[in-house]
Image: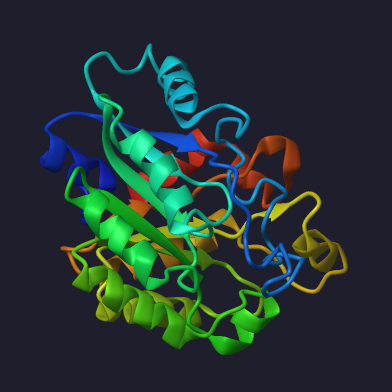
Length: 291
């Protein structure tokens, strides 16, 4: 099936010449939006696992987590490669020497082809940028920035904890260091219109992001967003609405910008809404058909 966008799977095949799987890593970090540096409640939508609900246990070493992740997909992959995805919480929120030890352990694993590091734009001091630049010379490094929206009112509502100029500065510094930048955007945030969401997509493309993750807003059990939803303060998107917005987003994303994700799914045991998103196979089939 020929897609009208540059998918991450295609990018990986073009880059590495084979199928590449991500192994989600929990390196045991926290977040400045949780430990009191900025706030203690975290972003309004963030799960207790810090968006790393599918990651391995942080009680295991990085190498043990990689081996466990490989075992999970061993029936699907025979001779492919892996990306070590540091997913849970904020993965540059630690002293540089601590980061260097954990990231180096992953990047030196013989089956790891690249690192993907999820973080916040306000957690990239110069010594960490320098470390990422050094690692990127060993194997490719992707840095995933949780922006979610460019709109100040929404950012305040979701308790993001930094302003848009912080994102702009992070992108510029990462790009100057030669690092591949991926930007996370949430589709369906409360009180945002389709036009608002398209403005965010257009902005990050012009800001120089190399890739985009489009993420459906999930309401998860135990989050502050759950309380807002149950009080009737907002509605979640229907599947048809979501696909309509996705199509409009894809239309304005330049063909050289890699689309890493078109939806995403929360842990079924914690999913409050939208319940249609739990049927991942059906959702992906309908998205692919529409695109």
